[in-house]
Image (tube, rainbow, N blue to C red):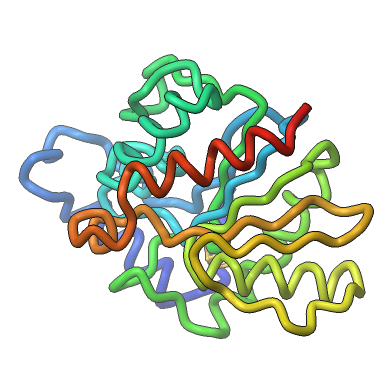
Length: 214
Ligand code: SF4
């Protein structure tokens, strides 16, 4: 995939890939849009914000090779949703078990903040991917950006009433005939290092999700 619709993001993803960072100087960075990863028949779909500069933008796989991935995949493993606790590179052997993860925006944004027009540019990719995930029973939304992107999908793509749906950690919304929505703080170091999101909080959420899946 070689989409170049967002000039600012294209220039940033390529700049990061060319300049690299010292500890990954030997890597051949991906530097392109990062698609979702996992089991296409998954009942759990996890949506994050966007690839990290030296995570997904380096490795080419979403939630791979950065601290958010380290935290989240270890928890997913403990809850039985991955084959191993680590997510380091495309060839590390990771398999998602009844789960699929993707980002609302596919290219790394400066400061982890996509602009509104960039989010809108990338929305058709999110729509397409979500429509393919026909077996989803729960959608776990990591952070307000992912939450709002999914609510846009419900409202604009599926024509559902999303009135009253607001992001907060632990919020759960149910719409008959559609996957349940679970909201969590994003597992970024900003949240996990400050105790805003602890391992116990995230595992609790995953345990509740597990109960939704027969
Ligand atoms: S963020 Fe999405 S729409 Fe923008 S360049 Fe990347 S893939 Fe294309």
